[in-house]
Image (tube, rainbow, N blue to C red; front, side, top):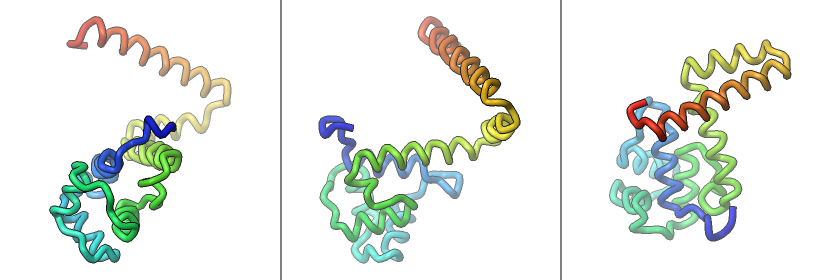
Amino acid sequence: MTDAAAKPLAAKIEYLFQTVQPLGREYSLQEVADGCRAIGGASFSKAYVWSLRTGHRDNPTMRHLEALAAFFGVPVAYFFDDEAAERVETQLALATALHNADIRAVALRMTKLSNLDRKSLIRIVDEIQRIKEGATAADPEN
């Protein structure tokens, strides 16, 4: 990822809110503030979390970043190393997908297939996506 494409801190925090949902819902600002305070970010408040999440403040201390990272279960490098952020987001996307029972069932069944069969199935899924994307572009109702 180039510096020009660097993701702002607020976007990274927003991604964590939208993706890390062990309660089956997005954490509230208060839950994040309380959790970060308990971890060691003494000055965390609901308003401070909101200001970081929305980009109104974008220069937290290392202690605050460490508390946020620990709360959301990501390495602190997620916030300042865009390559680390990409890796973390890929892992979180996979973890989120595997929480879906249908996706998990397909993934488990694929382990019993040969490499050739898995590659064939991937091509079929790619083709379905391509067709679906074409249908969506042509017919927004689909």
